[in-house]
Amino acid sequence: MRVFLLDSTYAGTGTYCLKKRDKVYLFRSLRLSSGDLFTARDNDGSYYEARIVDEDTISLTPVSRPDRSLTDTLSGFRGKIAPVCVYQGLCKGKKNEDIARMLTEAGVLSITFFTSEHTQEKELNSHAAQRITTIMKEAVQQSGSETAVRDVRVIPFTEAVREAEGRKIILHQSTLEESRYLSEILQDIEKGTLISLFIGSEGGFSDSECSFAVQNGADAAIMPTNILRAETAGIFALGAIENSLYS
Image (cartoon, rainbow, N blue to C red; front, side, top):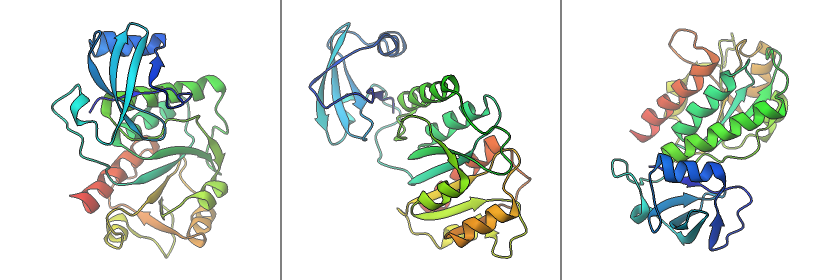
């Protein structure tokens, strides 16, 4: 389901002024014109029936379900998928962009980057952070994902573990005795439960970090697969979660 994502500054008014990038998306990508309806969403997850007034302005009417204003008929609005917040170890270069795009298209609720013992990059510059935000916005508009697009955060691993809510799961290749296969852990989780999923950077997690996560309520999960790259582990795990809890 394609959806137009309103800017974070939107304050709930009945009209919205289009920016240059907005116009490219609506008039070139979606090929809409004056009077056409489409679906819009704000950063709080509220939906709107949007109508193009002129080349600079759209009108917005709040709706509970965006069925009538969908621009694509192949994928109707079916509600939320598995509620997952992803905490991702900061990776090198443009890998973070690929990770953010894939996770957003998959429909995670939020993405938070963290630094840990094995992360080679310890911060994101403002340009890289803005690039990731732009990529996430484009992914939301293309897929209809309910991922919250906000300023990119990079926090320490220990802070991420402490702030995470719901059922915490950390994917690792450590030697922890508490480790179980991800499929076994998912059998104990009820549909609709919020899951906070921790994915390491290229170097994974240290044994001490895994132990810290377990001591703070996380399930240590391993998968019966080859060792996955940092940029594929998250999307693989999301597929397993979706298949286990929502198939």
